[in-house]
Image 1 (cartoon, helix red, strand yellow):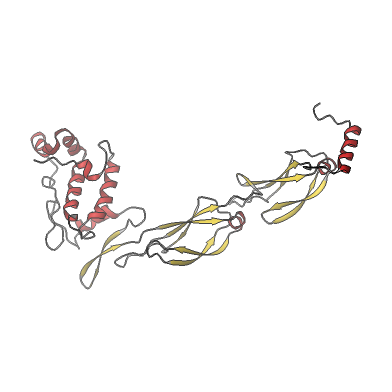
Image 2: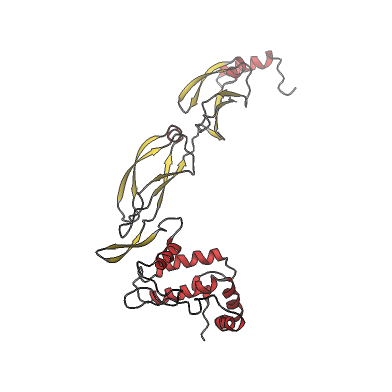
Length: 322
């Protein structure tokens, strides 16, 4: 008896979990199923995949296979009784492309409950393009598969993400190579990493099945005016030394435009002025905006400025270092 490496057939390591084996089987079964893949050798490949799944998907059979190799079935027959109906587990494809073989209760047919259960197991579950089945037209069988989901990146400015609204997009369609236009409704306060779902705008289904969905993954572009602190925003406000010392009224940027803020006399670098509700929108209410003072000095001084600074240094009793 020739040895078949069932782990290699499924493309999984020998310590693969049952979940990994199931995932590998489903992926390969979708690819090589004779009703989907008409290439030469697909049917034989599908039989090997199914045989490997039948053995590795059962803890007892897998243990015997790991110990005895291809002689696992003989070892099982001598060491215990196999589950009813699984002694000669196999897929048998006739000229008509239907199912037959050693499943309990006989073969499958397009209208049989066993056939439906098998494909529910094989193609059921979540994920792009995971739902499939057979539909009929004119009495014949037609493979029906929901279209795959697509994902694209949606770059937004901070204002666009904060205020929301509608936006027209033109995206390339990977399934056709053409371009498609969309009008997208952007929820106010959306954040980077969140996705906007456009139902039915993914790949077209086959056999009358529904199209997949298009997911737009949001990426908010950095804004040099603002830094994030949770739902709050921080903006740096440059102030001249005399503004910091004497106090002043300056303009501060916000997501709704510039507003005037009073700088208290005696402000120093790092002092913050809180603008309540001027931060980033959130479900629980907008965050706050903090205007953070940054005292700056001229890179160069005129003769008069140097003279005045010199007079100030001589007249002032301020000792910044104690």
